[in-house]
Structure formats: structure tokens, C-alpha cells
Amino acid sequence: MKAVRSSNRLYPSFLASSISVTDIGGRSVRPYQPDGYLGDLNFPRRVWHADSGENQYRRGMYTFWQRTHLHPTLQAFDAPSREEAVAHREKSNTPLQALALLNDPTFVEAARAFGEEILAQDGDVEARIDWAMQQAVARPVRQNGEAELLANTYEQSETYFANNPDEAANLLGIGQRPIPSDVDQGSAALVLDLEQRGLLEDTLVIWGGEFGRTPMGQNGDGRDHHIQAFSMWMAGAGIKPGIIYGETDPFGYNIIRVEVHVHDFHATIMHLMGIDHEKLRYRYQGRDFRLTDVHGHVVKNIIA
Image 1 (cartoon, helix red, strand yellow):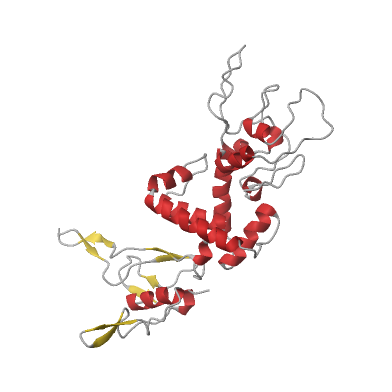
Image 2 (image 1 turned 60 degrees about the horizontal axis):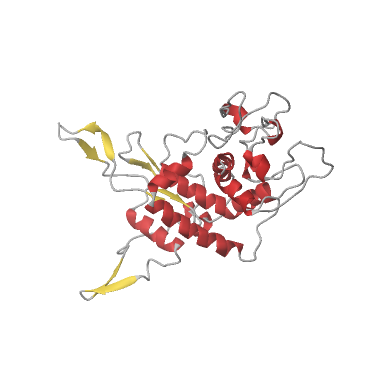
């Protein structure tokens, strides 16, 4: 990640997201800092206690400064030590700065908040990417191989998070910002990773399962299956964002509006993959079989 900086400003995802508090004035604040960073200071011994709430997300000019022992992030980004007056602030572009942007809890937490904002934008995935790029780096997406690079990054991240759910939980657990209790951590980490890199448009994400369970018991034999209806969740690859298609009764048992058969679901998936479900056939016992048998219609209303 490249930081676009002037002598006094830094524009990573922290300022692009609404997590940044832009209020003017107030006391000095204490953002996240490595444990023991003040351990070598004496008279008296000092312990850094990070602030919570809005004080954690104030602008850098309000960060508490212990004489010449400045905050590590300020030090990494060439803040003067104040031992002498400077007329011009030195600027550098170092690997340490890139590591700070990728690993400092302040920026990781802000990236997660920024990802949530990207998901909330109207329009298709391409429009969301353009919005995010304008917010983060003040330019549109370049058509010079960026898309291919991001797609490759996505594939690697998707595989990694799918195989390492603990790492997904660790990513979402960085910082004080709460994770919605009704969101699966691995799934949220995947979508966050996709949106941050602009890769969701090239990948179809599906959440689902077999039958759900009813809330009522069946004569002491446990809960019954939802035999008439169950829900699937889809994102990316041309799926319209932010819509609900179809509806069940309050118990999720019977369909009351817009039925989508499993054959329609399969036909739609194949359509998004560029496959005509009516032409995909295999020969078995003298008959040409299809995945959708003699049924199936593409559900065009959910496709952007």
C-alpha cells in the first residue's frame, strides 16, 4: 500500500473511513502502541494505556507526546523530534512505512471499517471499487493490469481464509471496533478482503446449507426440517447487491412470494460462470442428462 502524503498529512484507509474523528480541540489522546514502548523511561516509570471510544480515532496532531519519545507511527512517518525547529519536514518512502500501514492496529481497524462502508454503497461492484479508490487514493481504477493483480490477490486470500478460520477471527478481532454478533467471522473476513482489493466482481460467493430446522418440536422426536423452503445468500460475480428475492412465512416453512427451485438456482450459478445449463449434458444409459434435468430457469432478477 502506498501512502499519499504531504508534509503534514497521511491518507490511508484511516482518513478514508468514517472511523476517523475530525473534531477540533480537546485533550491529548493515546492510540494503540506496542507493549513496553515506554519501558525505558524512568522518573517516574510510565505505562501506556490506550484510549477507548472516539479518543482512539482522533487525528495524529492530538497524539500524546512524551518529550522526544514520540509515538512509533509518527516516528515511522518522519515526524520531527521537536529537539529543534524545522522549516521543512523531511519525507521518505520506506518499507517500514508500508509495514506500519499493513500491521498497525489503527490502520487495520480502519481498513475493516472502510470495507463495511464499501459494502454499503449503491451500484454494482465496479461502481463500489471506483468509489473506494476515489476515497482512499483520490483517483479512479487504472486499466493497466490492476484488475488482474487484484484478482490474483483475491484467489490467494480466499484460499487462505477458507483454510485458516482462526486467522480470519484474528483479523476481525484487531482493535476495539465491535464485530456484529450475527456475522460469521470467516465469511466477514473474506468479504472484507474482497472489497478492499476490488475482487468481489470476479468471484461468486455462496452461503447456504441443506434444510434448516423448524422452531417447533415434532411429538418428542426433535425439530422438523424446513421441507418447503430454505435461504441462500449470494454475493459478487454480477449478483445485485442489497436485495432480497422471495419470501417465506414467519416460520420459514412455506413460500409466500416468488419460488426459486433448486434447478433454477443451479441454472443461475452456471449462467454466472458462463455456462448454458441447457447445453451442459452428459451421456448415461443412452440418455443425455443435464444438471437441471428437464427443468431450470436463470433467475435474471437477481443479476445486475
